[in-house]
Image (cartoon, one colour):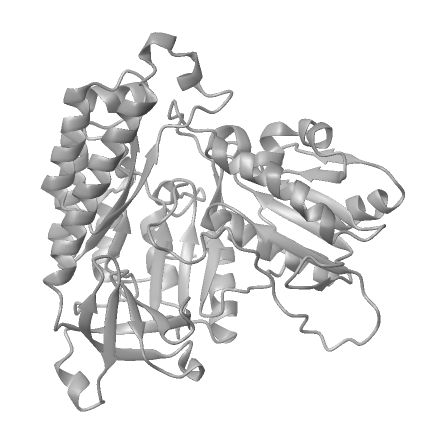
Length: 479
Protein backbone atom coordinates (compact mmCIF):
# COMPACT_ATOMS: atom_id res chain seq x y z
CA UNK A 1 0.00 0.00 0.00
CA UNK A 2 1.25 3.42 -0.84
CA UNK A 3 1.23 6.52 1.33
CA UNK A 4 -0.93 9.58 0.78
CA UNK A 5 0.78 12.94 0.15
CA UNK A 6 0.77 15.31 3.11
CA UNK A 7 -1.27 12.96 5.30
CA UNK A 8 -0.55 13.25 9.02
CA UNK A 9 -0.90 9.63 10.22
CA UNK A 10 1.94 8.40 8.01
CA UNK A 11 4.51 9.40 10.58
CA UNK A 12 8.07 8.97 11.64
CA UNK A 13 7.23 10.40 15.04
CA UNK A 14 6.44 8.35 18.12
CA UNK A 15 2.73 7.97 18.77
CA UNK A 16 0.92 6.72 21.85
CA UNK A 17 -2.29 7.16 23.76
CA UNK A 18 -3.18 7.70 27.42
CA UNK A 19 -4.36 4.92 29.68
CA UNK A 20 -8.12 5.15 29.84
CA UNK A 21 -9.32 2.51 32.31
CA UNK A 22 -8.87 4.59 35.46
CA UNK A 23 -6.76 1.92 37.15
CA UNK A 24 -4.27 3.05 39.81
CA UNK A 25 -2.58 -0.35 40.28
CA UNK A 26 1.02 -0.62 39.07
CA UNK A 27 0.99 -1.84 35.49
CA UNK A 28 3.85 -2.43 33.08
CA UNK A 29 4.22 0.39 30.59
CA UNK A 30 4.50 0.08 26.80
CA UNK A 31 5.73 2.58 24.23
CA UNK A 32 5.22 1.99 20.50
CA UNK A 33 7.06 3.99 17.85
CA UNK A 34 5.42 3.76 14.43
CA UNK A 35 7.00 4.10 10.99
CA UNK A 36 5.51 3.69 7.54
CA UNK A 37 2.04 3.66 6.03
CA UNK A 38 -1.44 4.01 7.44
CA UNK A 39 -1.71 0.23 7.80
CA UNK A 40 1.15 0.39 10.30
CA UNK A 41 -0.66 3.11 12.23
CA UNK A 42 -3.74 0.87 12.39
CA UNK A 43 -1.56 -2.06 13.49
CA UNK A 44 -0.04 0.01 16.30
CA UNK A 45 -3.55 0.81 17.49
CA UNK A 46 -4.30 -2.93 17.48
CA UNK A 47 -1.14 -3.67 19.46
CA UNK A 48 -2.00 -1.01 22.01
CA UNK A 49 -5.48 -2.47 22.33
CA UNK A 50 -4.21 -6.03 22.74
CA UNK A 51 -1.62 -5.03 25.34
CA UNK A 52 -3.86 -2.69 27.30
CA UNK A 53 -6.43 -5.47 27.56
CA UNK A 54 -3.60 -7.61 29.00
CA UNK A 55 -2.71 -5.14 31.73
CA UNK A 56 -0.25 -2.73 30.07
CA UNK A 57 -0.32 1.04 30.31
CA UNK A 58 0.58 2.91 27.11
CA UNK A 59 3.00 5.83 27.52
CA UNK A 60 3.98 8.57 25.08
CA UNK A 61 7.76 8.54 25.61
CA UNK A 62 10.26 5.67 25.68
CA UNK A 63 12.10 6.86 28.79
CA UNK A 64 11.99 4.03 31.32
CA UNK A 65 9.18 2.14 29.59
CA UNK A 66 8.94 -1.54 30.52
CA UNK A 67 8.34 -2.45 26.88
CA UNK A 68 9.52 -0.55 23.79
CA UNK A 69 8.16 -1.70 20.43
CA UNK A 70 9.25 -0.30 17.07
CA UNK A 71 6.60 -0.89 14.40
CA UNK A 72 8.47 -0.86 11.11
CA UNK A 73 8.20 -0.32 7.36
CA UNK A 74 10.11 -2.26 4.68
CA UNK A 75 8.99 -0.48 1.53
CA UNK A 76 12.37 1.21 0.97
CA UNK A 77 15.90 0.46 2.11
CA UNK A 78 16.41 3.78 3.88
CA UNK A 79 13.35 3.06 6.06
CA UNK A 80 15.02 -0.10 7.38
CA UNK A 81 18.38 1.65 7.79
CA UNK A 82 16.73 4.33 9.90
CA UNK A 83 15.04 1.74 12.09
CA UNK A 84 18.33 -0.05 12.77
CA UNK A 85 19.84 3.29 13.76
CA UNK A 86 16.84 4.12 15.92
CA UNK A 87 17.09 0.79 17.73
CA UNK A 88 20.60 1.78 18.77
CA UNK A 89 19.40 5.16 20.00
CA UNK A 90 16.66 3.55 22.09
CA UNK A 91 19.26 1.82 24.27
CA UNK A 92 19.67 5.01 26.28
CA UNK A 93 16.01 4.90 27.32
CA UNK A 94 16.12 1.31 28.57
CA UNK A 95 15.99 0.22 32.17
CA UNK A 96 17.81 -2.94 33.19
CA UNK A 97 14.75 -5.08 32.52
CA UNK A 98 13.21 -3.18 29.57
CA UNK A 99 12.09 -5.44 26.72
CA UNK A 100 12.63 -4.18 23.18
CA UNK A 101 10.73 -5.62 20.24
CA UNK A 102 10.53 -5.03 16.50
CA UNK A 103 7.18 -5.49 14.76
CA UNK A 104 5.72 -4.89 11.32
CA UNK A 105 6.96 -5.33 7.77
CA UNK A 106 10.70 -5.11 8.44
CA UNK A 107 10.29 -7.71 11.20
CA UNK A 108 8.44 -9.97 8.77
CA UNK A 109 11.07 -9.55 6.04
CA UNK A 110 14.21 -9.96 8.14
CA UNK A 111 12.98 -12.29 10.89
CA UNK A 112 15.82 -13.56 13.10
CA UNK A 113 18.34 -11.34 11.32
CA UNK A 114 16.97 -8.45 13.40
CA UNK A 115 18.04 -10.29 16.56
CA UNK A 116 21.53 -10.67 15.10
CA UNK A 117 21.85 -7.01 14.14
CA UNK A 118 20.40 -5.62 17.40
CA UNK A 119 21.39 -7.84 20.34
CA UNK A 120 19.17 -5.94 22.79
CA UNK A 121 16.03 -6.86 20.82
CA UNK A 122 14.10 -9.76 22.38
CA UNK A 123 11.09 -10.27 20.09
CA UNK A 124 10.50 -9.93 16.35
CA UNK A 125 6.83 -10.07 15.33
CA UNK A 126 5.26 -9.85 11.89
CA UNK A 127 1.84 -8.32 11.11
CA UNK A 128 -0.06 -11.57 11.73
CA UNK A 129 1.51 -12.23 15.15
CA UNK A 130 0.24 -9.37 17.31
CA UNK A 131 -2.29 -11.52 19.13
CA UNK A 132 0.63 -13.38 20.75
CA UNK A 133 2.38 -10.24 22.04
CA UNK A 134 1.45 -10.65 25.75
CA UNK A 135 2.72 -14.24 25.79
CA UNK A 136 5.88 -13.33 23.87
CA UNK A 137 6.64 -10.52 26.31
CA UNK A 138 6.15 -12.90 29.25
CA UNK A 139 8.71 -15.23 27.67
CA UNK A 140 11.11 -12.36 27.04
CA UNK A 141 11.04 -11.54 30.76
CA UNK A 142 12.40 -15.05 31.34
CA UNK A 143 15.32 -14.23 29.07
CA UNK A 144 13.97 -15.97 25.96
CA UNK A 145 14.02 -14.52 22.45
CA UNK A 146 11.29 -15.05 19.88
CA UNK A 147 10.63 -14.61 16.18
CA UNK A 148 6.95 -14.81 15.16
CA UNK A 149 6.64 -14.30 11.40
CA UNK A 150 4.25 -17.00 10.20
CA UNK A 151 1.36 -15.83 8.04
CA UNK A 152 -2.15 -16.46 9.34
CA UNK A 153 -4.60 -16.11 6.47
CA UNK A 154 -7.57 -16.09 8.86
CA UNK A 155 -6.27 -13.33 11.13
CA UNK A 156 -8.21 -10.07 11.05
CA UNK A 157 -8.09 -9.32 14.82
CA UNK A 158 -11.89 -9.08 14.92
CA UNK A 159 -12.06 -9.49 18.70
CA UNK A 160 -9.25 -7.00 19.44
CA UNK A 161 -10.47 -3.53 20.36
CA UNK A 162 -8.06 -1.02 18.86
CA UNK A 163 -6.96 1.88 21.05
CA UNK A 164 -7.18 4.81 18.66
CA UNK A 165 -4.85 7.75 19.04
CA UNK A 166 -5.62 9.68 15.86
CA UNK A 167 -8.29 11.76 17.60
CA UNK A 168 -10.66 12.75 14.79
CA UNK A 169 -10.63 9.82 12.37
CA UNK A 170 -10.43 6.03 12.45
CA UNK A 171 -8.13 3.90 10.32
CA UNK A 172 -9.94 0.62 9.66
CA UNK A 173 -8.22 -2.24 7.80
CA UNK A 174 -10.66 -4.08 5.54
CA UNK A 175 -8.12 -6.14 3.64
CA UNK A 176 -4.70 -7.62 4.34
CA UNK A 177 -2.01 -8.76 1.95
CA UNK A 178 -1.73 -8.33 -1.81
CA UNK A 179 -2.10 -10.61 -4.85
CA UNK A 180 -0.51 -8.18 -7.30
CA UNK A 181 3.17 -8.89 -7.86
CA UNK A 182 4.66 -5.58 -8.92
CA UNK A 183 8.34 -6.24 -9.59
CA UNK A 184 9.58 -3.51 -7.22
CA UNK A 185 7.26 -4.23 -4.28
CA UNK A 186 8.03 -6.16 -1.08
CA UNK A 187 4.46 -6.02 0.28
CA UNK A 188 3.39 -9.54 -0.87
CA UNK A 189 6.41 -10.86 1.03
CA UNK A 190 5.77 -8.88 4.21
CA UNK A 191 1.95 -8.95 4.26
CA UNK A 192 1.13 -12.23 2.50
CA UNK A 193 -1.69 -12.98 0.06
CA UNK A 194 -4.81 -10.86 -0.16
CA UNK A 195 -7.75 -11.59 2.14
CA UNK A 196 -10.75 -9.45 3.04
CA UNK A 197 -12.78 -9.01 6.21
CA UNK A 198 -16.49 -9.78 6.20
CA UNK A 199 -18.57 -6.73 5.37
CA UNK A 200 -20.79 -6.94 8.51
CA UNK A 201 -17.64 -6.96 10.69
CA UNK A 202 -16.35 -3.80 9.02
CA UNK A 203 -19.73 -2.06 9.36
CA UNK A 204 -19.91 -3.04 13.04
CA UNK A 205 -16.47 -1.51 13.70
CA UNK A 206 -17.45 1.69 11.90
CA UNK A 207 -20.60 1.92 14.01
CA UNK A 208 -18.48 1.52 17.14
CA UNK A 209 -16.05 4.33 16.25
CA UNK A 210 -18.91 6.66 15.33
CA UNK A 211 -20.50 5.94 18.71
CA UNK A 212 -17.16 6.98 20.23
CA UNK A 213 -17.50 10.37 18.55
CA UNK A 214 -15.36 9.94 15.42
CA UNK A 215 -17.02 11.08 12.20
CA UNK A 216 -14.38 10.26 9.57
CA UNK A 217 -13.27 6.75 8.61
CA UNK A 218 -10.47 5.63 6.29
CA UNK A 219 -10.77 2.08 4.91
CA UNK A 220 -7.35 0.46 4.49
CA UNK A 221 -6.07 -2.22 2.14
CA UNK A 222 -3.02 -2.89 0.00
CA UNK A 223 -5.27 -2.71 -3.09
CA UNK A 224 -8.39 -1.74 -1.22
CA UNK A 225 -10.80 -1.54 -4.15
CA UNK A 226 -10.20 -5.21 -4.98
CA UNK A 227 -11.95 -5.98 -1.68
CA UNK A 228 -14.27 -9.00 -1.83
CA UNK A 229 -15.44 -11.03 1.14
CA UNK A 230 -16.99 -13.79 -0.96
CA UNK A 231 -20.40 -12.16 -1.07
CA UNK A 232 -19.78 -8.40 -1.27
CA UNK A 233 -17.43 -6.27 -3.34
CA UNK A 234 -15.92 -2.85 -2.66
CA UNK A 235 -19.00 -1.07 -4.03
CA UNK A 236 -21.16 -2.89 -1.48
CA UNK A 237 -18.69 -1.97 1.25
CA UNK A 238 -18.69 1.74 0.36
CA UNK A 239 -22.48 1.87 0.37
CA UNK A 240 -22.81 -0.05 3.63
CA UNK A 241 -20.19 1.96 5.51
CA UNK A 242 -21.40 5.23 4.01
CA UNK A 243 -24.89 4.53 5.35
CA UNK A 244 -23.75 4.28 9.00
CA UNK A 245 -25.69 6.91 10.92
CA UNK A 246 -23.43 9.72 12.11
CA UNK A 247 -20.58 9.10 9.65
CA UNK A 248 -19.78 12.30 7.75
CA UNK A 249 -16.65 11.42 5.80
CA UNK A 250 -15.49 8.18 4.17
CA UNK A 251 -12.06 7.78 2.58
CA UNK A 252 -9.99 4.78 1.49
CA UNK A 253 -6.42 3.96 0.51
CA UNK A 254 -4.79 2.71 -1.59
CA UNK A 255 -6.72 1.56 -4.65
CA UNK A 256 -5.35 -0.05 -7.81
CA UNK A 257 -6.29 1.47 -11.19
CA UNK A 258 -7.41 -1.95 -12.46
CA UNK A 259 -10.07 -2.40 -9.79
CA UNK A 260 -12.32 0.60 -10.41
CA UNK A 261 -15.29 -1.32 -11.77
CA UNK A 262 -18.39 0.54 -12.94
CA UNK A 263 -20.06 -0.59 -9.69
CA UNK A 264 -17.30 0.94 -7.57
CA UNK A 265 -17.32 4.24 -9.47
CA UNK A 266 -21.12 4.43 -9.17
CA UNK A 267 -20.96 3.72 -5.44
CA UNK A 268 -18.43 6.51 -5.00
CA UNK A 269 -20.61 8.93 -6.95
CA UNK A 270 -23.85 8.09 -5.12
CA UNK A 271 -22.65 7.68 -1.53
CA UNK A 272 -22.64 11.17 0.03
CA UNK A 273 -20.09 10.32 2.73
CA UNK A 274 -17.42 9.33 0.18
CA UNK A 275 -14.99 12.24 -0.08
CA UNK A 276 -13.99 13.87 -3.36
CA UNK A 277 -10.44 12.56 -3.33
CA UNK A 278 -8.74 9.47 -4.73
CA UNK A 279 -5.11 8.51 -4.22
CA UNK A 280 -4.44 6.68 -7.49
CA UNK A 281 -0.89 5.28 -7.77
CA UNK A 282 0.52 5.79 -11.26
CA UNK A 283 4.21 4.86 -10.73
CA UNK A 284 5.16 5.67 -14.35
CA UNK A 285 3.64 7.33 -17.39
CA UNK A 286 5.33 4.93 -19.81
CA UNK A 287 3.55 1.78 -20.96
CA UNK A 288 6.88 0.01 -21.48
CA UNK A 289 7.98 0.93 -17.96
CA UNK A 290 4.65 -0.13 -16.47
CA UNK A 291 5.12 -3.52 -18.13
CA UNK A 292 8.56 -3.91 -16.52
CA UNK A 293 6.98 -2.95 -13.21
CA UNK A 294 4.22 -5.54 -13.82
CA UNK A 295 1.56 -2.95 -13.02
CA UNK A 296 -0.95 -4.69 -15.37
CA UNK A 297 -2.25 -1.52 -17.03
CA UNK A 298 -1.05 0.79 -19.80
CA UNK A 299 -0.64 4.54 -19.92
CA UNK A 300 -3.93 4.70 -21.81
CA UNK A 301 -5.68 2.49 -19.25
CA UNK A 302 -4.58 4.78 -16.43
CA UNK A 303 -5.75 7.90 -18.22
CA UNK A 304 -9.10 6.27 -19.00
CA UNK A 305 -9.53 5.45 -15.30
CA UNK A 306 -8.85 9.08 -14.38
CA UNK A 307 -11.38 10.28 -16.95
CA UNK A 308 -14.08 7.88 -15.68
CA UNK A 309 -13.56 8.99 -12.08
CA UNK A 310 -13.62 12.70 -12.91
CA UNK A 311 -16.69 12.32 -15.11
CA UNK A 312 -18.56 10.61 -12.26
CA UNK A 313 -17.39 12.90 -9.44
CA UNK A 314 -17.11 16.60 -10.30
CA UNK A 315 -14.32 18.37 -8.47
CA UNK A 316 -12.49 15.13 -7.67
CA UNK A 317 -8.94 15.65 -6.39
CA UNK A 318 -6.41 13.03 -7.51
CA UNK A 319 -3.06 12.36 -5.87
CA UNK A 320 -0.59 9.68 -6.87
CA UNK A 321 2.71 7.80 -6.39
CA UNK A 322 5.57 8.00 -8.89
CA UNK A 323 8.86 6.08 -9.00
CA UNK A 324 11.93 7.58 -10.69
CA UNK A 325 14.96 5.58 -11.82
CA UNK A 326 13.40 2.13 -12.13
CA UNK A 327 15.81 -0.23 -13.97
CA UNK A 328 16.30 0.61 -17.67
CA UNK A 329 14.28 3.82 -17.48
CA UNK A 330 15.11 5.81 -20.62
CA UNK A 331 14.93 9.54 -21.18
CA UNK A 332 11.88 8.94 -23.36
CA UNK A 333 10.13 6.88 -20.67
CA UNK A 334 10.81 9.55 -18.08
CA UNK A 335 9.48 12.16 -20.50
CA UNK A 336 6.29 10.06 -20.76
CA UNK A 337 5.93 10.30 -16.98
CA UNK A 338 6.29 14.09 -17.03
CA UNK A 339 3.80 14.30 -19.89
CA UNK A 340 1.19 12.21 -18.09
CA UNK A 341 1.62 14.38 -14.98
CA UNK A 342 0.87 17.45 -17.10
CA UNK A 343 -2.10 15.71 -18.71
CA UNK A 344 -3.70 14.49 -15.48
CA UNK A 345 -2.65 17.55 -13.45
CA UNK A 346 -2.38 15.78 -10.13
CA UNK A 347 -3.25 17.70 -7.01
CA UNK A 348 -0.19 16.26 -5.28
CA UNK A 349 2.11 13.24 -5.40
CA UNK A 350 4.45 11.09 -3.41
CA UNK A 351 7.61 10.84 -5.51
CA UNK A 352 10.32 8.28 -4.84
CA UNK A 353 13.70 7.28 -6.16
CA UNK A 354 13.70 3.56 -6.95
CA UNK A 355 14.92 1.47 -4.00
CA UNK A 356 15.75 -2.19 -4.74
CA UNK A 357 14.32 -4.57 -2.14
CA UNK A 358 15.87 -7.95 -1.52
CA UNK A 359 13.55 -10.72 -2.74
CA UNK A 360 11.72 -8.68 -5.38
CA UNK A 361 12.01 -9.44 -9.13
CA UNK A 362 13.49 -5.99 -9.78
CA UNK A 363 16.70 -7.03 -8.02
CA UNK A 364 17.16 -9.80 -10.60
CA UNK A 365 17.08 -7.46 -13.57
CA UNK A 366 20.36 -7.07 -15.51
CA UNK A 367 22.92 -4.91 -13.68
CA UNK A 368 23.41 -2.78 -16.80
CA UNK A 369 19.80 -1.62 -16.41
CA UNK A 370 20.74 0.27 -13.24
CA UNK A 371 20.33 4.04 -13.66
CA UNK A 372 23.28 6.16 -12.44
CA UNK A 373 22.60 8.05 -9.23
CA UNK A 374 23.23 11.46 -10.79
CA UNK A 375 20.71 10.75 -13.55
CA UNK A 376 18.11 9.60 -11.01
CA UNK A 377 18.70 12.71 -8.91
CA UNK A 378 18.30 15.04 -11.90
CA UNK A 379 15.12 13.32 -13.03
CA UNK A 380 13.72 13.38 -9.52
CA UNK A 381 14.30 17.12 -9.18
CA UNK A 382 12.64 17.72 -12.56
CA UNK A 383 9.64 15.62 -11.55
CA UNK A 384 9.24 17.41 -8.20
CA UNK A 385 9.35 20.81 -9.91
CA UNK A 386 6.74 19.70 -12.45
CA UNK A 387 4.30 18.21 -9.94
CA UNK A 388 4.70 20.98 -7.37
CA UNK A 389 4.30 23.62 -10.06
CA UNK A 390 0.98 22.12 -11.18
CA UNK A 391 -0.18 21.82 -7.59
CA UNK A 392 0.68 25.45 -6.90
CA UNK A 393 -1.24 26.62 -10.00
CA UNK A 394 -4.31 24.68 -8.94
CA UNK A 395 -4.12 25.92 -5.37
CA UNK A 396 -3.73 29.56 -6.38
CA UNK A 397 -6.90 29.20 -8.45
CA UNK A 398 -8.77 28.11 -5.30
CA UNK A 399 -8.08 31.28 -3.32
CA UNK A 400 -11.33 32.90 -2.28
CA UNK A 401 -13.25 29.60 -2.33
CA UNK A 402 -15.17 28.43 0.71
CA UNK A 403 -15.12 24.85 1.84
CA UNK A 404 -15.89 22.61 4.79
CA UNK A 405 -12.90 21.46 6.84
CA UNK A 406 -12.47 19.04 9.71
CA UNK A 407 -10.08 20.41 12.33
CA UNK A 408 -7.54 17.65 13.02
CA UNK A 409 -4.81 18.93 15.32
CA UNK A 410 -2.56 21.77 16.40
CA UNK A 411 -0.20 22.72 13.56
CA UNK A 412 3.54 22.41 13.97
CA UNK A 413 3.94 26.12 14.60
CA UNK A 414 1.76 25.72 17.69
CA UNK A 415 -0.32 28.76 16.77
CA UNK A 416 -2.71 27.57 14.05
CA UNK A 417 -4.87 24.46 13.79
CA UNK A 418 -4.44 22.02 10.92
CA UNK A 419 -7.65 21.07 9.14
CA UNK A 420 -8.55 18.98 6.10
CA UNK A 421 -11.11 19.62 3.37
CA UNK A 422 -13.19 16.84 1.82
CA UNK A 423 -10.96 16.95 -1.27
CA UNK A 424 -7.90 16.50 0.94
CA UNK A 425 -6.52 20.03 0.99
CA UNK A 426 -4.58 20.92 4.14
CA UNK A 427 -5.85 24.20 5.58
CA UNK A 428 -4.29 26.11 8.49
CA UNK A 429 -6.96 27.84 10.55
CA UNK A 430 -6.74 30.38 13.38
CA UNK A 431 -8.90 28.84 16.09
CA UNK A 432 -8.76 27.58 19.66
CA UNK A 433 -7.56 24.01 20.23
CA UNK A 434 -10.98 23.26 21.67
CA UNK A 435 -12.21 23.23 18.05
CA UNK A 436 -10.23 20.08 17.23
CA UNK A 437 -12.74 17.56 15.91
CA UNK A 438 -15.16 20.27 14.75
CA UNK A 439 -16.30 20.98 11.21
CA UNK A 440 -15.86 24.59 10.10
CA UNK A 441 -16.64 26.50 6.95
CA UNK A 442 -13.57 28.50 5.93
CA UNK A 443 -12.61 30.86 3.15
CA UNK A 444 -9.26 30.03 1.57
CA UNK A 445 -7.17 33.17 1.96
CA UNK A 446 -3.62 32.11 1.17
CA UNK A 447 -1.44 29.25 0.00
CA UNK A 448 2.19 28.23 0.22
CA UNK A 449 1.66 26.15 -2.90
CA UNK A 450 1.18 22.99 -0.85
CA UNK A 451 -1.11 24.06 2.00
CA UNK A 452 -3.73 26.76 2.51
CA UNK A 453 -4.56 29.27 5.17
CA UNK A 454 -8.25 29.74 5.81
CA UNK A 455 -10.49 32.08 7.76
CA UNK A 456 -13.63 30.71 9.44
CA UNK A 457 -16.84 32.29 8.15
CA UNK A 458 -20.03 32.87 10.09
CA UNK A 459 -23.06 30.63 9.89
CA UNK A 460 -24.87 33.20 7.75
CA UNK A 461 -21.94 33.52 5.37
CA UNK A 462 -21.56 29.74 5.10
CA UNK A 463 -24.81 29.51 3.16
CA UNK A 464 -22.75 30.51 0.13
CA UNK A 465 -20.20 27.75 0.65
CA UNK A 466 -19.28 25.63 -2.38
CA UNK A 467 -19.86 22.41 -0.48
CA UNK A 468 -19.99 18.79 -1.61
CA UNK A 469 -21.93 17.50 -4.56
CA UNK A 470 -25.60 16.56 -3.96
CA UNK A 471 -26.18 12.85 -4.21
CA UNK A 472 -28.87 10.39 -3.18
CA UNK A 473 -28.06 7.80 -0.55
CA UNK A 474 -27.43 4.46 -2.22
CA UNK A 475 -29.37 1.30 -1.40
CA UNK A 476 -27.68 -0.87 1.22
CA UNK A 477 -26.68 -4.37 0.11
CA UNK A 478 -28.32 -7.33 1.79
CA UNK A 479 -25.98 -8.55 4.55
